[in-house]
Image 1 (cartoon, rainbow, N blue to C red):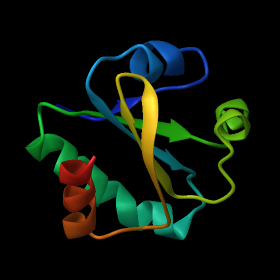
Image 2 (cartoon, rainbow, N blue to C red):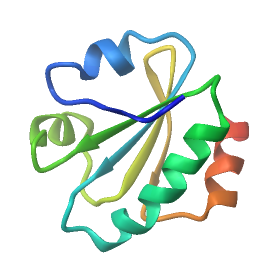
Image 3 (cartoon, rainbow, N blue to C red):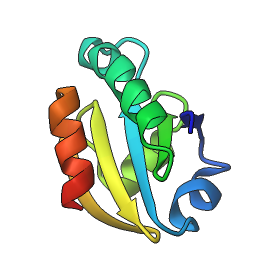
Image 4 (cartoon, rainbow, N blue to C red):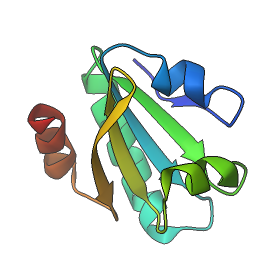
Length: 104
């Protein structure tokens, strides 16, 4: 499954109202660590079709950032059946992201 870009208008439908595991990458174009994480996030998404992967541009969707209490980026949040179950702040390796997927 490919990564879906969502905003304030579609976040609830694509994340909160989705059954199963959804992984959300909160990022910004100007963020160096976000650019490092981007290709890793895309690769893991393409290798994991049973998990939904979503990206949120925080500059365009600051309301979501405030609502979820995000203070730094990149932040990756893991939701199961609409409930947040895990959060990782900062860039991570492919191995760490895959390990987090199996741990939630």
